Image (cartoon, rainbow, N blue to C red):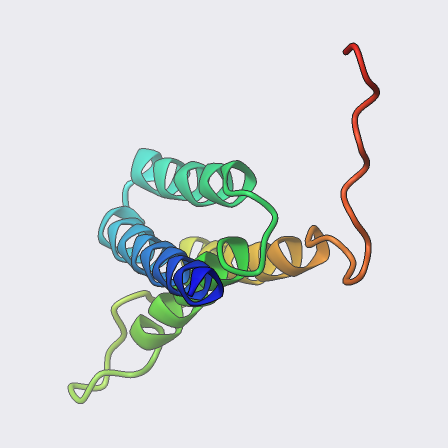
Length: 122
């Protein structure tokens, strides 16, 4: 029964991190045309990835949801225009999403390796 509770908590953490990633992506897109909004959104995304623990249930769901949220708004609208136009800000957002994906997966612990034990008395 404890194992099932642990799985439920991991899934809940993954869903919460994905929701946070999507919310940060929407906020970044909403403010990306203002220079301070673009910097604030980029800083929030980078800070969230670095602040989240390096686990499969935290960093990757955040980064994947962030990238998926940006990918959704980078598509052409039915009117023929884009929410994020091609330009410096748009390419910065796209590059940021790719960097967050790489960092979130590259910083995960290797499978089968236990965390180093702390020395007694420290």
